[in-house]
Length: 459
Ligand code: ARG
Figure (tube, helix red, strand yellow):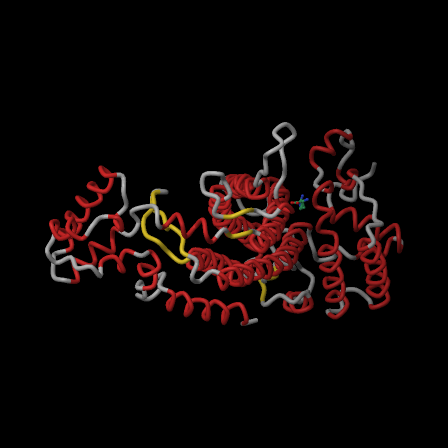
């Protein structure tokens, strides 16, 4: 089949070679952005007197008709036309005749594809920002129900100190807030127009890059035409922000998986987000959490893949850069899906507050309280730590917990102990007292909740 760029060729490639080089199987995802970009371009060509207005009107009408068909999923793409840009151009020419061939005046596929990607990511990143916010909202709602739910806090996955479950949930709120900030910040760089950079050097036609930028809602233009067509930083940045977000979700998934195990029983994942086993009738598996944890790996993969693709490409455009698309599309799909599933999973999970609370009474996570108690009475903390460490050892030998030791034993360890230690040892008291800024004390957690709500209520 004759190519749109076939003039200097005497032979055409075989179909299997075309197939290898084609991006249409995946870049058809850009169809709407591609047409929108073309409409802006041709409008500008008219305004700048580069094309007569009759031509512009015909081309615009043709493009709008194609856009309508695209929205209805009625366009049929062909590998013979390589990519979305040539497919649309061919369809336009078929639709309105040779005048359609004027659309590409003063433009290259190099600035065209970059424009499409910027438009596409701007839309998707805005959606992702909203989905993160939705998840933050769900976290705040859950946290509000559990300010006074006490749960063991861990370090090294060993019981460390009791905490408010809301405080734990809000830790993720703040991680997500940073993610949202990063995506928002990245919009500054995504929202720039490469259109009009041409193949790499600009064009001889008296185009107006600011006009196309404005028509497409971009905040500005790339300053350098070579940079405009060869930059893929904005995609790498998107993949990097996505990798970080997925890492956060994955850590949370790991906790949900642990918490829903027989060993913890802190939560129960709703039936709607779990699956059974084909052989073991008793099983309820936290599949969705595992899957999000697993999918994190593929997002990391896409990031590394594109960094590697770009590291050896000389300026300006190289076909290698066609490899930027599949990972980006897949990441959008993965991140969007994961955020939606995650919000549903958190919203519907059952929190076994009684099991959590019981756990805090059956460990040594209140040992710090005793050390603090002595330190408050003037014992150097290091000595207090030693004394309490010995008391823990005594407990282990006797098979009891700190609250079970009689006062004589405490007195023997240090005469400074009085019977108010039993109050101090209560996990509820231990949590309630930790009201240093950003701590797990109930008063601090309530303040944090107010702050979090303020943030999610800010548009
Ligand atoms: N399909 C190509 C891509 O995705 C479009 C740009 C092609 N430009 C070129 N000069 N071959 O990168």
